[in-house]
Image 1 (cartoon, rainbow, N blue to C red):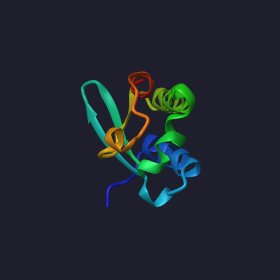
Image 2 (cartoon, rainbow, N blue to C red):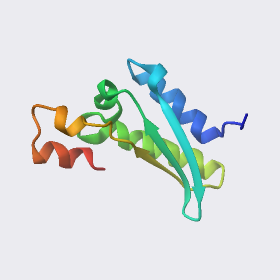
Image 3 (cartoon, one colour):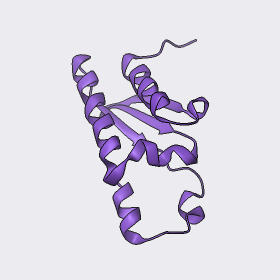
Image 4 (cartoon, one colour):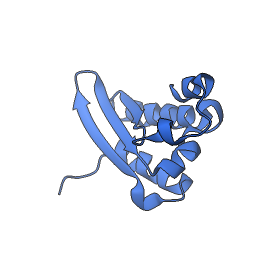
Length: 103
């Protein structure tokens, strides 16, 4: 089994502490010439907890991940995967709400 990297483990620990369904948290790690990309998938019900008001929680998590990356001489970026059907299932779909989710 592949060893978990410090940045991936850090993200999993933070997110599982924030969400209601920690068993649904999945983090994929990809490395390319741009650095490290961590893709986060959670239960659709937990998306609000991860993003926070006006994206404040997501911004804070990204900032902390960059610091962890700097410590390990790597550029770390976070992509929060949108759950399938999340836009269509939301009864209050407005363009301003969608814009706030894009960080």
